[in-house]
Length: 259
Image 1 (cartoon, rainbow, N blue to C red):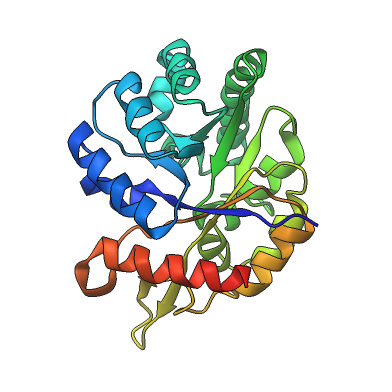
Image 2: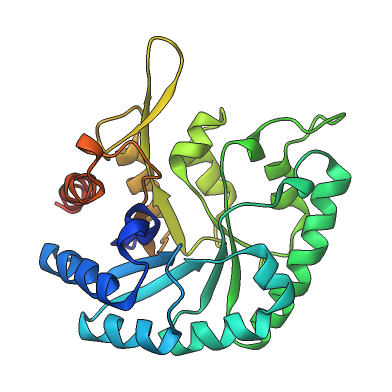
């Protein structure tokens, strides 16, 4: 059994990583909290060399990224070079573009494209990693299957890995622990996220441990499945509108799981 390394998905703090100086200040705060692992997502347009310098200054490891599908299709060589510079072997996609979501045929077209990407990444010692939302767990048009069914059944495990987001899995109507087990051997990073649903049926994200996701069960499953990393991510709805406060609360909760 392996205890996952805890870290922060920087998409949560995206407004504070848009230039080298703010990136440095943000990692200073995270380092002071005891964070040593991050996921890079929605970072500003400054060089991978500058990113590496700040990461090394704060002794931070990047376990995975999120990058745009357009760049994966049109500038994969550039992405590979950037990942080599920052020392990350996992290229992540935050979501399938809309044109690949609605039917089995469209999902299979997505698989074809990501397989080509995965083959090239593998040749460079890297992996392609797919982050889910809720739509992957809903039936496709004219089908008894979901997008996730097809991704699990028809992708090549060594070429298509997953970044399971436990809150989106649950919000999509599935059991996060069961899905983690179906993805066994194909997950480097899990996203921990939490949410509540108010009386009018609206979803609201909350700091970890304050919502309806059974994160303790997910943590135990991650240990059982020997998944290396868990990253906290919260898209919006931060405590008092303060993303750093939400990070601090959620980090404290993650540390409680380790005790």
